[in-house]
Length: 211
Image (tube, rainbow, N blue to C red; front, side, top):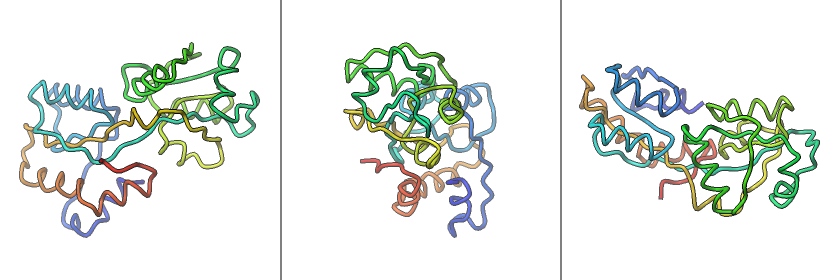
């Protein structure tokens, strides 16, 4: 997990990082409510912009990007082996995606619109992990998740590339929280997060470069 790998970096040998791995909307809300935080990392621009507009953080930097893919269960009951197969069977298949309020749902919606494909999801989930869980358990015939999550699922799913997905890559952003009581340390951490060394870490987990 990238959290453990970050903590293990020599540059952080004398620093103990407390990670709060919540959804982006929830993280921003927690800071709005006065919760303690030094650095905010979001999985999309929308929620980071909300934090910027609310005066909660300094100017953000992009750390990495992530693309949307389609996953189907290992046994693949609907025999979906390509995007064209999905388009042909989507009306009879059980499809799950994230809710529009969370980054994964917003990106899935953009990619579907880009391809002029309409889908009526059987459920709208609050996280990518929930989508992935429904696909791996066989509750769903297909689901929209990030490439990184599909890779982490291994052979429990089959990954199908989505046309034009690269046009709508999600940005992973970081910013120093203005209410942080450790401003200097927070700035140093953001500098480390955007370094080439950490960029290589992102890549090992399936993320793409920030550029």
